[in-house]
Length: 396
Image 1 (cartoon, rainbow, N blue to C red):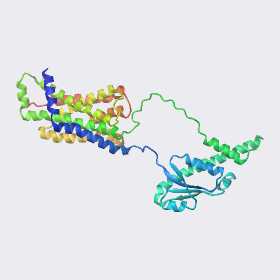
Image 2: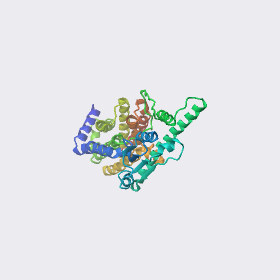
Image 3: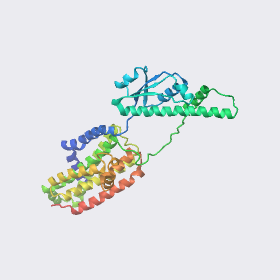
Image 4: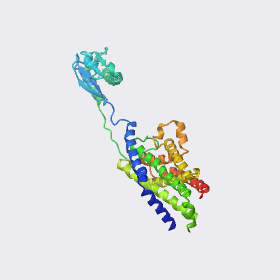
């Protein structure tokens, strides 16, 4: 009962402070939203780029029609019909990165195995885009040559087997139909588990757990600093005169810090969910990670209070420690994009294991069994931090 009284008193004092609410609740929300928007650009574009290709077909043959169909089937190209005489000027003026003219006689030359010329125009001011369009045109031409070769082989086989002859035009049309046919693809959906490490978190999927991991350290480190403030003001010494006992007193303080961390993390989870972060795939896994990381952060806050001699030192040391742990542990950016040596170094930090566990839930869609290793490592961190902190803590 006395322990709960101390805990409730700590929680009341903590969350009745307007500055604490601003720093531990409002600021994490702002950082989560702003960084989430900023990091959306790190991912692949929603749609592939499209380039305009000015096209003039002066041949009007089955071969040129087949080439047009191949170009139209390319999702990266947007064909715009234009007179052949206007294409060079329009490309030069920047109306499109490239233009293509299929001259008269193209189909006949292709059918009889003669060189078939195409007139391709590139814009000097959009050279990279023009090269991409040229590569797409080259792919279409290669397909067209494959159709022609298929038709030629079919005719030779028909001659050898004494099959009634087929005209070159008919053979080309049949080969083109076969090449352009799309066999239906039937996809059977089944429950799958996303493999660990196959996706790099971006947007709010990175910023939501990242800001949770970082700002909860500020809360727990601030809780550790309150012990130093009470020691400097002789509050702890006066409390020891009361029939509480050291274990009850420190236990109530620790439980209060731990619960305040859980409250803040729960608010961050709900806010992230409102922004579209999928925290709800495995509630048991999320609960395990919140409890494990909250315990490790609380224990680390006590350790910082032991290392620092005064509350002022603890404040400065806390800020530096939180920023370093957050940056190296992957809270600011995906750990997958940093150099290998930084990824190796991060494994020695509790923030890394916290981020990995939360990302297993959010990005990789994994459950309780998958996050148990991360939760176990965090619990081990917490035990070590707490043992050292309590051992070295000075009451006066």
